[in-house]
Length: 426
Image (cartoon, rainbow, N blue to C red; front, side):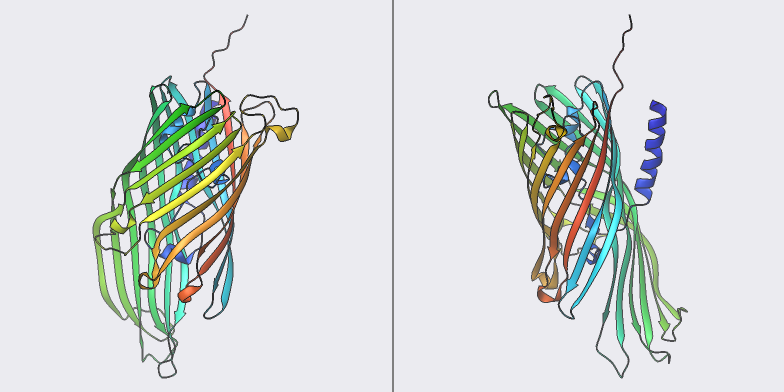
């Protein structure tokens, strides 16, 4: 049985890291694309708080120190998917479009090795690029000039986290990730003309990366009184210089309606690095009677220091604020007379200043949303399903920019099985 589950894990993990779903967004054009929030469905329902949240029976995807909550007899398997609908609109000209997406969000296993050491292995997407933007210039001699920007791909990561408990109530976590993936981008200028009097220009760029990066986490539990505990948590990712290769091809063609190359303008390959800048986050969580959790997280990341093969994209530093709560009527160990008493109820809000500042630094792109969720346990089992929905908005209609309204659904299956229990028969 154990071998079968590990084999299934390998198969699904391969699917996850080699073929992530499509999240179409024009904002994925910049930087490394749309950064994927790797919180679980449980944490997403709480506004994506995670740094200090205790996670008995769950796997904390954001703070490696949280792995220490895995008990000594359990093997945890957590698999999640998310998807949703995104509504895009612009004012000038008045246009709108609806897109849908679905992707695997994470696949993780976790278990305890010794009394003071727990571990987890997993895979998840890191960023996503998927856009196709077309704009038109003024007519030149009755010929329209068209600009097209398209991109596909993204980066994924496989990670191994370890958490240690050197003293009671203090957890220290270390996470090693292998980041890899390919992003293809095409920029084109073409003319609506079949006479051959104009020359179209196309630039194709492929960027591939593969390298390791590391991050660290802490969690500390402070007992206030018999009814209340205060949990503190923090994470730190230092600057990572991810090795990669970049190939660029520029060529032109006559405007004859075909795609025959007339002249190659440039064609080269280069090696270099992509900077994943340092990230610092801290959180606080108040636990009351093992039933109610109130949590707050703050995260900052220095994207203004990022370089992509020695090129700066004028990105902004990001700041994220997350607040959430979880309420379980029976607590952790109580008896439920009705199923509704065993359900975990969650809600939260988030606000992020993204790393995008467009229109010559005149317009900061912000992301705001609210979320709701439920933890649905299976009868006579530690296994549970977690459902969450997040409703939010990114961007603005000011300065001819794009506003994105979204509804994202998340589902995770958390299988907890007792593998390491020695049974006795008389």
